[in-house]
Amino acid sequence: MNEKKSSKRERSFIYKPFIVPTITIAQNNKITIEQAYQLLSYSTDEVTFESESGTVQVIGEALTITLLYEEQMVMEGVIREVRFLSS
Image 1: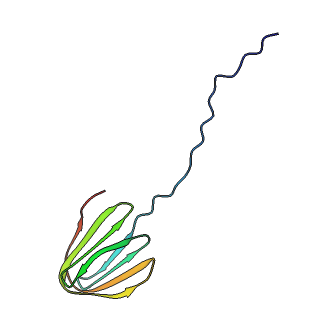
Image 2: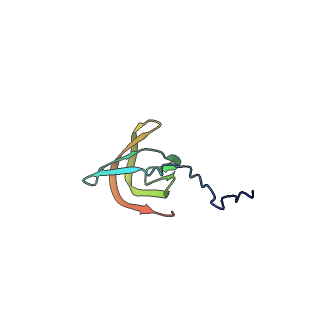
């Protein structure tokens, strides 16, 4: 007897959660970034960080990082603009 081999291919999917930062702005003087990010550059008028979803730039005046942990960053100062540069 001839047995037919199944032509079905099994597919396996590897689930990798897409982690995007949570950005919270309080008025125009405090911004909190939570989740995965990497700080790329810092000055008193510009802070740039990268996450899985792209590069984010915060532009303002007298920006100060008041809290810096692995999963959270808080900045204070006059926040003028938040730019999402790439995805």
